[in-house]
Length: 249
Length: 380
Image 1 (cartoon, one colour):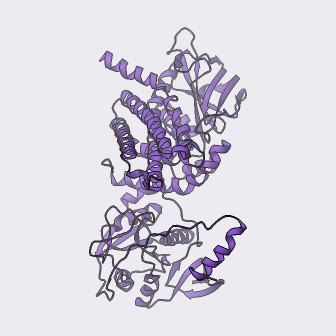
Image 2 (cartoon, chains in turn green, red):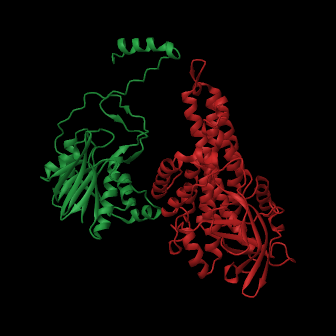
């Protein structure tokens, strides 16, 4: 069972995100890069499927600049067999990223492509399904359970208020949702073994970006709360505020 | 600041930090309050290889350098120094002397499962009447055929209640003080081996600590660690490496207290501004940072000497002395910056101050460290 993983390096969720002075990009100084948390579910699932199959390899592919090797090493430390760094500048355009990744995996032999359902930085939910389109493969997104059945995959995907069970032939693209599994931590042996695993570099072919960033704005500061009074006596004032200011009643 | 760490050391740092924040942090308050041993956390640390960081791979360890080990203990202790010391004892005081002095049989039977985290170890040197004057210990080991019979009491044994394997120092020769001591590997289920009750401690309350009572405890002769009379050397070798661990514990805790103080000073407002805007607070924070970094560098320097195969006794003593001294100051200032809130259990610095004190006491008090350092100076 050969599985390709599409991974993304994202800023640590505790990082302070500031726009650059021209307001068209994010200031990346001092950012700690981590593996996108949704991609961790994809990594864990790939490792489990490979180990259950007893053969095959798991290959992690990531598109971007110098932030990429660290998170690829992270995946290798978890147990992935090798990495491919698709070099290029990270972009806001999900389609450009998808093109770079699809071009990198096209022609490779795989049974499955796994990725996170979205990246926590741009939240586009786009790359996985776009890669599937570009490679002319079926795709299932927001998946919380994967089962192999007679050469096909049964996937449970989350929808509003319930689950949909989808059957898909392989190869295909599956985008992981939280709940799919409990990702493992890298062990010390895994971290040391990662040093000896190859990370190949290829030039990314992302094509022309169709997205132009006009402006990046920092989140507005949260307004301070108001204490209207205490106990039952405060309720009329609260109702008035909710009706007239917040307009939620 | 990356302290010229290698890529691999930085990867280890981020891996253990992630583990500590996700797996250890959520239960710190409850375990401190209830004096509860973190059994599940220790089990997971073992699976990931953190219970035998420096132990060579051929014996089941991770085979890593001592700087990596210091990083691991720092990162654990930044979140919870109780977990830090549990891990440090198993690594430094158990796996290290077993590796150095153990026979093939002992490597296979004890070192491998201890380094793999399948067994937990405790180190028994101190006695009610032999603390800093460790060589005054009175526990006896009398040879009887193919066995030794151990009798006596050991005090302040970290991991004492939870361990499977104990390294116990006992006297085989009453005519010689240090040369009359031998080290034994004792299984917890040995006849005549008994544990006391969990001590009620000021800090590191999630780490257990108890007396070990030996009543004609019979130990097979093959469990003698090193030769008869090597016991004091075994203990001092273990403590040299242990002091790098305790220094790392103090440094990690100091880092945790500093981060808590920075966070609080940016939230708390007085006189119409964040207290971080006041120079009085800024100077405290700057001093706390400098002290923590200085201790960290001194400890990495001791660790690098050990990695280079050089003697590191004095370096480890200096690092442990400085680190335990600064963590008291840093934790105290962290509480001060928190004002009244720092005196409450609602904020982590209250626990941190209680956790800090023991680093000046165990694995050689600050006074003993100074004695070691001065003795070296004066005999050179």
